[in-house]
Image (cartoon, one colour):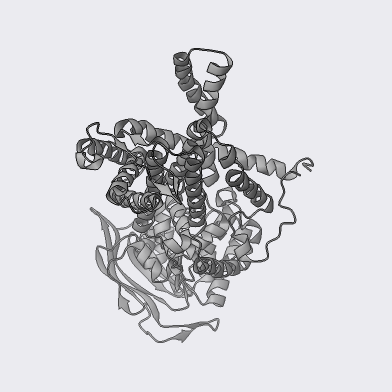
Length: 358
Length: 273
């Protein structure tokens, strides 16, 4: 009886609709948050921040964003890398144009700009669906990367063609630039992740989320019962791109510090985030976290075991890593096509009865 | 045969039928060279149960699709609540208070019964995106209010036990009931039912008939339905439109229609010239 909901009665609709409806879940999430805010910042070092926690948190935001579009609204997108680039470059432009304004505002502003771009590229979704839409978003991916490469205005005419984040502080603590401490990077990302995950949860439990899912499950019926497909699809593109844009802005400013667009935000980034969403579970916020954790942690784990544990050469490991990750993805999808979130759900259903299944 | 009087009248079983709620005037619907509906006029009156019947391919579903805005008629006019309806998208028609169910169940399979029914109320929910994103008190209040309205329908349809079950897991009969619930959640003025009893056994049909009559009686909802089971149609409906090959061949009370020679021919099959 590690996990149960017996005796957990709700007496009002507000209670029934709360963020974590099951009492046990609630305490577990609070415990995770307490550790994330109260313990990790004090013990984190550079390696853990840059190899594990910061990329995990940033990819979690991007995965939630893509999950809103693909998992909740059913619109496949291969443009995630391109939209992350929009977030990164608009953040850079905002940072350099308005140095006196807080970086947090810039990151949110980058999200808003990306949302607008996302809506623009979402317009074809009103006429085309499925694979065809995927190809249209692929065009967005290539176009955006090309644009940021070709137009020097976006990288402030720097000779290298790269953008690099100047130092910015929040409450006197540097969060971007070379002097940033590991815990500061971690905390900035954590605050964004927690806030945005909460927003995603709110949207998906309300009218907006239901209209997205209605479009996903049966678009014609959705329109006939009163869902405006134009509004539903474009809000999904806007919200999704906002999340992805924030992720791109953090990826550039807090995590990497300097990026070259083709390298950091190429098509492989789009696929990486899409894999996270598929492995984690379509239509699940928890799944977005699980998928991001899986694809960020697995390579680190493999590298540590193979290089650190067995002493194999690094180049061999790098190739093996790709093979093993690929094989594991295939294995997972065969074993559980609905992703880690579904495994988690099944596990919970079993635990509910454990240890007395009858 | 068509009733020309626009005044309220009282039916045989003592219910009052109001004025004209919806009127189809000379509706023609063509797909390329195929004429699905040919110059059909009829009306639906406030508070009645109006059946549309006819053999397969007669154009009944097309007619329902015209009413719900899924098709725009090639010719003719649709009048609703005394006003001519301009060409509209289906979601705009839904906002006018017209809800429907589908011949093949069109529920949102990945969502729970409650979520399906809450989606049915979407035309009535107006809290903004930011209010929902930040879960402001106004958004929470709206959610609870509408939840309460939906719960009444859940009670009415006796589906309390499947509230949180994803509808994809429910048996066919229950799915049909949830779909009715989703349409009712919109509190429509006009409810369109496309073969509500298709594929049901006798008990399920009896249940569904009872729900349809209760909806009409308790909520005063006007209902237009397509159904193949003649027994059900004759028992439930106040007036019947009969279609065949896209044309209207009969219109009137069940008794009048039953005695109509053209209708008998259409159903028993005589050679058309």
